Length: 337
Image (tube, rainbow, N blue to C red; front, side, top):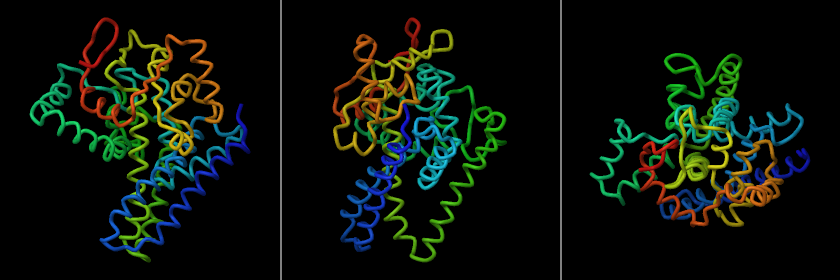
């Protein structure tokens, strides 16, 4: 059951914490000697701001409030502030939920297939670079460039929708992902992001580019890091399969989502998005403040299907980046080779 007052309180908390970090950032001198402090500021502020991202994500799922206008207004403002096209992402993310771990219709982190140019090319790069260097390069490309590559070109999306763009649902991009009225929503979402870019441009003209880069740009990179990492690790690992159209079902996709131990601080800041993700995929309209109860119910009723990996996040991240490169079909599923 959704509680608008409670949802607004969580949204206000995330916004207040983020603005508090921004206020502290204004006290840091813009000098090279303070670069380590600025890096720490970016890590902390971007991590805190991810809570705002998660609240907007909840709005996009219809889990924030029964008041649809308020829900979309909160989601639109928070996502636009983070340069996320709210309605465009709402649509593509709904497809991600509707086709989780589907080899051709999935959205985001659809693996390459061994025997194809993409799959074999990745294997060859790993052999040429060596596993440690390849893993570092893959982590950087995914966690730094992965989000813009996805919203601009549909990178890691399934083959069904072609090359997509979350700001322009027309040629030269495919419009299949955004049918009918969704195209107008895409343009409205783009207007929100471009308005924020206008605000940032005005800020840069009045205060200089460096303060904008330090106070806003650095934290934004960290927020993008978190959102890509969550999606990647909740649906990818050496023992998590994918399915083709003849063998995929919604239940298979939802129950091949995995919960992970992010710890009490990240669970608080990010509204438990990583530690209750299975329940979120079983029913994405469950508010995050009810997700622990839903997760416990799933563990009790379906103990043989509920997935939890206790591996520390940094170890799981390295394992996924180094080992989960291309899949091959075995029986009725695709598994990492």
